[in-house]
Length: 536
Image (cartoon, rainbow, N blue to C red):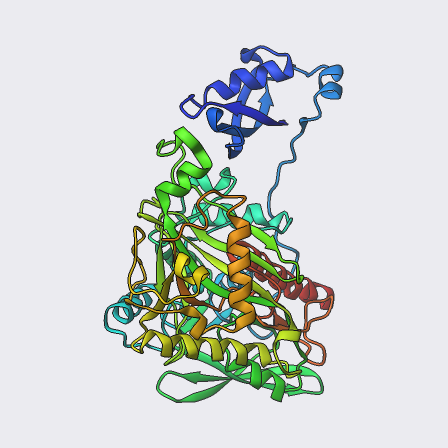
């Protein structure tokens, strides 16, 4: 089987043309090809008069057919294709069932991997099952009554369940394919296997998550919802039990020799407990900023020219970064084409925003996090949890500036750049789910941050026409893009001085997004499985 990259395909050309083009590249007849499978497709919009797809295919030849050596030597975009199949490491049954704390992407795939290995994991999740969680989130958006245990941050599927379900990642790991295949087997659209920027969509993710949950249960796993990891029991540097707090306030101790700690970075009450148990936590760079909204059709025209609006292209996305003269970075993150800005708080009287899109991405607005990079030097303290304190201060300030009830402070970009308060919107209307208060965001964000956002947005407009549209809307505050804390772990993925405890995923500071978190969950589960086999 061969992999052939950089095959051009017109926006409305049938995929069957790929076979003919692959045969031409291989200097063979179409009849010599047994199968031609699309493995990657991206949009090439560098020339606005010729927007097209660029494809990679995997080609299997009929028996007895060979590609001549000089063809392979001349065309470096043709190479032998590796057939990937995920294999569980060898393991033996653990004497005590492993525990997974947190049921976001990291915990979900850690539990799935352990269950597939016959280890019957026990999952602790402080939030609700995804069906109940959806009702709680909708109730919060409509009423402003927040459930601190079941919201956009907490519950089955993690924070990614109420996002775009983006599956892009900067990591290079063979397990990524396994993660995508697992999603498809659970009901995700098959196109995530070959799209260059795959996404599932907030409307489809809940059913996918539910199916993965049912798989874990069918393999003997247990999932305890409304159950929070309260404490650890360590003895001679070894984990031997955990304390669990239930939603009614009751507690019980659960024997545990292997714990995958995948609680997510919004589980802020967990970090002090870890410090009390002498685990090593470090400050970690992260980013804070706002959500920026533009009209989606204007972003489409800026990137696709006259091809904008073509159904084959769908809504456009972007990823921008600017490096300021003072060394600080500003960048966009979690861009949601045709999406909405949502209320994402998990603590009372603190305001947090996030973005989400359904699979169709057919909303009027594009939105993205517009973030300013922060380093520990910005935290104002050497305390390992100083970054969390900074997040909380910004969230409280945004809540006050919004006027309470989780209304968000919003400002037109033109007013923001000119230093005057907004009194209303222009062409871009806010999609924030709880309602907004027009104001001046300089009142709730620190000067170094507003200066960086002003400079960064102007610089980004040089790369994406219209990014500095005066009617674009800024909504504060986007504070949960990544963890401000790292839980130190060894090369064996365990916490020093706490054998059997595996810090995992975004909350531990080792991932940034659904896919990388899922991969880290698999890696931690594999570490437990391999250790069980080595000790046998």
